Length: 226
Image (tube, rainbow, N blue to C red; front, side):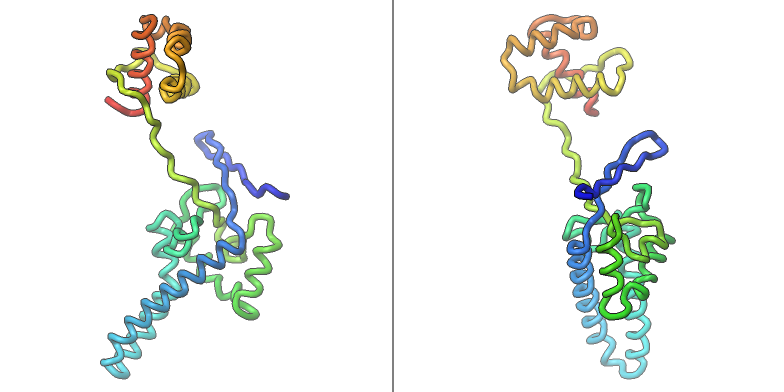
């Protein structure tokens, strides 16, 4: 299978396209997180070292918390991404596309021990390479998936026009068509703009240049301007 894209239908009827992240991106992200954790622990060790045996005891507790809850904290509060994952553009989600929850994050990270065996995550890497969605044991147990983070949506660039609502309820495809017209109108000739705008004269109650301006204003209203 050359295309690993997964289509997931949400309860709201929206199809999500999830693209599982491969082993190289995941290993690179883990290595960066490992370096970050090492830097954090080295700093803490330097501070607690002056407390002698008591400081060593506190350090062991802190090291445990950092090792096991560093990824959980960032995955739950950071939209599924630790600093390493965010740097490589990947994120953790539930298998159905929802944001990862606390319980799922804890399970997938506690099972890193199983993936570590027999040596330096050898089993976990092999398991990922042969799994169709690049999941490791922790992901299967927690019901999670590591995917490429979708690019942030950019708001449409619309030409200036007086903002005005359509006055009637429009279907989603009709709203998209009006916004698409406004976005592309500046790349069309004036005659073509007017020709297209006149198709919607029953909606705009305007012809020619006024019809174009009216559609642009509707597009700005539909895009969220009020």
